[in-house]
Amino acid sequence: MLAVLGEDGGLRAPDIAKRLKVSVPPARRDLAALKRQGAVRFVGSARAGHYRLRPEQKP
Image (cartoon, rainbow, N blue to C red; front, side, top):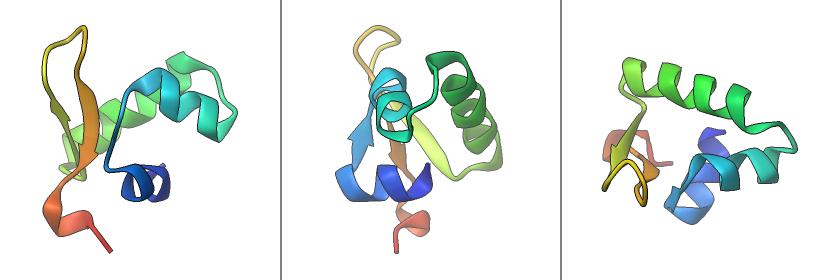
């Protein structure tokens, strides 16, 4: 998941799920865990926002 975010910079949960070939609920759950750990952040509004890697997580 971090690699996918690193490639594109910022993606919505459904886009990440599609790329990883998983359903959206598990992708959201994993993104929430990564957010709690500080690896990713959510940018923008709840409806139109996206997830991004934190700068210190970039390769």
